[in-house]
Length: 108
DNA sequence: GGTGTGACGCAGG
DNA sequence: CCCTGCGCCACAC
Image 1 (tube, chains in turn green, orange, cyan):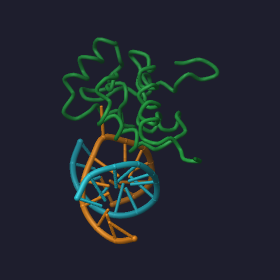
Image 2 (image 1 turned 180 degrees about the vertical axis):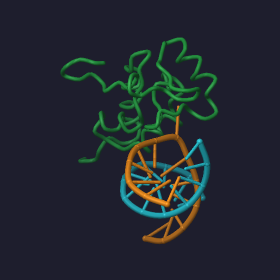
Image 3 (image 1 turned 90 degrees about the vertical axis):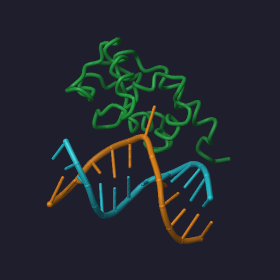
Image 4 (image 1 turned 45 degrees about the horizontal axis):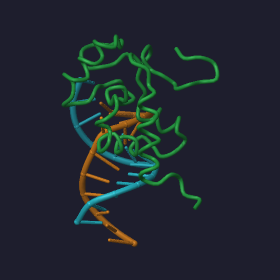
């Protein structure tokens, strides 16, 4: 009962949120877990690696802004297409692209 | 039940 | 920029 979202439910939670991240913005694994109030960065990363293929996975990155090793070409193309602010070649400018989720104030 | 692993995060050196 | 250690937690063996 009192469990905290088991497998399937958690996956739906994560994917559902990732789908809502606006184009041109990103969230870190930790942000997703924190916003969901369940699981942690590693759980989010696990879900993304296993079931993230159907959602804009490039909008979920590590806290250092680094894009996914091995998927840089895809990610870079998506960022260019969405106008995501980058910093250097393989990093997203979190200062500007980080999305905190739907907050009681506004985004940005 | 112990051990290893990982699309993590952060502090240190 | 690199690497190491530690905390974290679900999962495979």
